Amino acid sequence: MRRETSPGGRCYVADGNGVVVLVRVTTRASRGGVDGVGVLADGRAVAHVRVRAAAVDGKANAALIGILSKQLKRPKAMIRLISGATSRVKRVRIEGDREAIAALVEGWPKT
Image 1 (cartoon, rainbow, N blue to C red):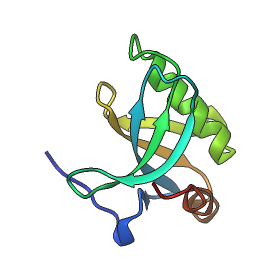
Image 2 (image 1 turned 120 degrees about the vertical axis):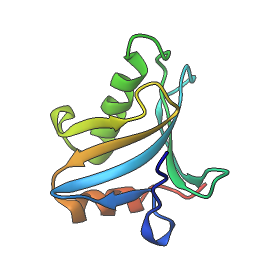
Image 3 (image 1 turned 90 degrees about the horizontal axis):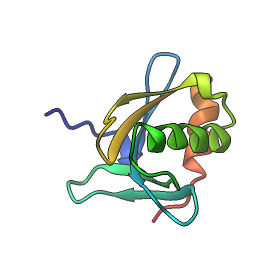
């Protein structure tokens, strides 16, 4: 399995005409939202996101896309899950202005 790391310990990497964000999802949370950016046991930086939906029939993935859409001010159609559909750690591609998206992600608190 390929482990990606981003420069400077960031949870995202600029990719083509967008950004790929590494996300760790907590399902069935009491509230949904982005908790901030932290580090996994293997050293990878990830955005910690809580969703209220259960991990059943793609509902948690859809909720994740909805939360990221609001946080990053992008339409849901510009956000796509590229890996980790059944895993807690996912790679999500957000299309659009890389600098603007990166600035929003950099504004998330460090945990």
